[in-house]
Length: 393
Image (cartoon, rainbow, N blue to C red):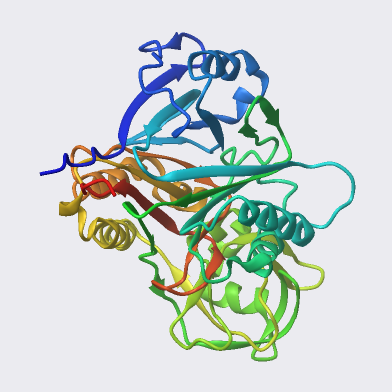
């Protein structure tokens, strides 16, 4: 009998901004097929020494990642810290392309060029995308990737974050630490298992309406009434706290041409002069929309559901990694109870599988299994990556 192929191996190393490494990294898993995913607080934009150290320890590996408004490690939310997760694949092929932003080239063009570059090096079964959260425009980037020939490929990931500061984010890839840039990662292999899922848990607030006036991400009217007037009717005195309280009341947008797929859009700003509201994503005229609200139990239920979804079939693997991209808006809603959402996920995902990730300024995932990916808000996305135990070819 031929020997069984060992699965992906992982190690995690935590760096505290003020104190350094809790456990110094060692390069035992360093190889040409090793990925070192790095997620950290936004202040690591000034700590190139930490990334240079990782490059020295893992010279053969690919080191890449981004900032978050909090770092996710299993059931913990970490601040002023950086997490390095080392993943050595035995048989899967993993490759990447990056664009450090310069000049005035459009985001759609950047996405298309990156998609084309990725495809020249292989045929990915799955693609991860990370981009800075302040300058890059999520939907045009994703659209560009799909136009390059990746529309039927699951694309997942998120926009780098810095909490509610909106001051600086970073991306890192192969010796380049930058405040503006885009990274795409291709994954392929006969034994590779990648399963993406998204969780919401938001409850309906009010009837379904039609957007009758909008421009890009700015909405002026629903059902021929001012959107701000409608929000004020429902929120009452709380409307004075807009846009800050808007994270608790996102808008569900039904995608055109698909009666089942919907995306959440969180409130970014309010213009009281024009009685309009801006959302973190496009809301086209004619879209069917509905106000939503969230509470602790509903959001925890959404987290459990997506964890169950991505863990389906986990019996065929013994190790792997789950990468979480969680909207910073959910953390703002949950406040000091944000760790309960991670507890809900950790209770479902197999104990041997580490959960790593970051709080993002927007998430990317397929709307439904085997459907094209979309840009999301107020959503927890989980991607389970593993290799099946199988005999070599």
